[in-house]
Length: 145
Image 1 (spheres, rainbow, N blue to C red):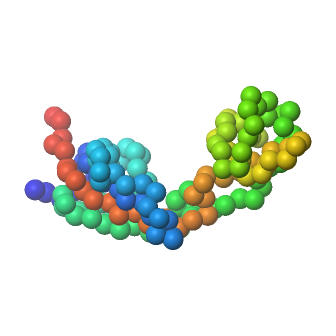
Image 2: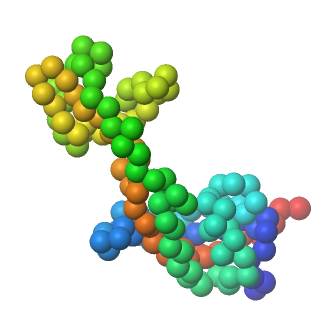
């Protein structure tokens, strides 16, 4: 079979690992991810390293924070008055909430709770981390005509 070229639709398996070795994503136990190269469906750096690979081949990509989930920005940690959050339950640290941050809906993590306020973190939970991806080409699908 021919190697991967731009425009190919691939079935891929991903294993995503944090710096401490914790695997936080592993598609090998389930269905592979379908992605067409050149259509911005996966990280452009992944597309670049997949070109020329053969089905069954695995490539490892290490992404620094700015190429993965972004740098950690302390300005995205905000303490808000409870009243402003308009919650219908008692928030707990580690919980995810949907709130409006800087005028946009955002999924945030509760980091601290006091009687009058709630501190939230609008950074992605993996912001600031270097992530290692093992990407396996499960198949190259035939092009439709």
